[in-house]
Length: 125
Image (cartoon, rainbow, N blue to C red):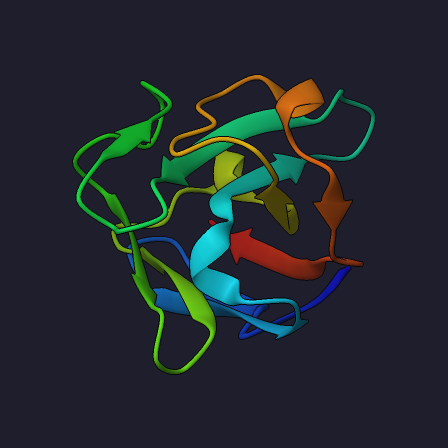
């Protein structure tokens, strides 16, 4: 079992940057493929980014490609989401997720077994 705790959210203006962190505890972090998802008010949860167990493979939603970067530090048991050029439409609760049994879990949320409680990102115009 792995426990995930997100941090780094906050209120920023459009164009600003934030870095989200997700600290994992429990089982060996490097055995999990990781992902970030988000849920905006009144909308369904959507995929943001994913990273393989080694960190060598990544993928992004089209809406964040070129602005967001996912990375991980297996020695620190942490996955990051660097968010640049933030837009009001990026406002959402951001969730970190861990997938067992995958080298790379991709965009399907059903691939992920463990979820954090989320961190709120609000981008004002």
